[in-house]
Length: 169
Image 1 (cartoon, rainbow, N blue to C red):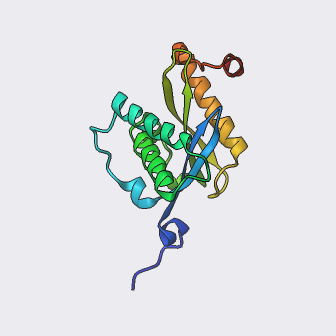
Image 2: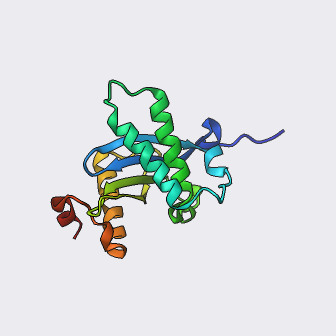
């Protein structure tokens, strides 16, 4: 007789990894708990780089143009799919701790407009104390820390809004 797993991740098919979309001007857009099947997928090595980032930025831009009343599940699903594909292509994904070593992992895909007029994307991560999603306030803190860390290494990617740039330094 096989022993059934007592790990809740195995019973409900969901991992302890959450993904979020955040923009300093818009706030948190979506949150989603990743299924174990998504965590275990092998990444297509062709899905990387500027073309992928540009595609995800386009999805985000289209999402932001719709009002909350006009959003359908299809638009939400498209945004979540883009976020997952993008996050899986980054170093942040490969640096995640083992799932059984933490209560939860939170990946915040943060986007912002740079002073040069481009859209920058960054995946910032945090560990959680429970399997629950983090609050919008914590999403903002993780996202802003991700921007700050990125801008330290890439100063030309500072935010276009001067008041927001002052927060980063």
